[in-house]
Length: 149
Image 1: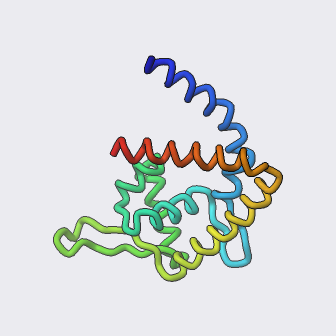
Image 2: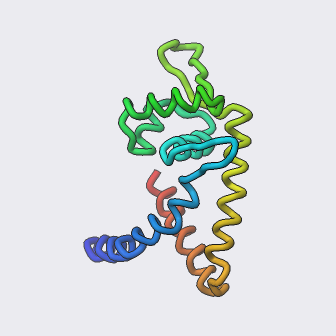
């Protein structure tokens, strides 16, 4: 029975992913404006740090599936752009946390508002019943992941 669940989920994700990369990913992970020109991994890092509030490089590396060497480059660039800061652990000077600066928080708010506008445009023609099914489906997926923690 479990194999069948895996097969069902795989099939639907296999159908979904090309559309995710075509429609969703550019909305969430691309940004070029007059203030910032950020690449996909920089945006992912900012959004992840925002969700975690404080993140170690190890946590980010695992969460985003980015090699630590590449992540170091991303961190340095985001610090240089004044979007994140390093906060060292008072108990262990080797450990530090990444947090959004006020500019980083402003960017995330801007990006979230833009995502909502673009999602509204993308899903404007979807009927209410289908929209409810999509939202309910994602909520069920989130609840399943929460139950695994």
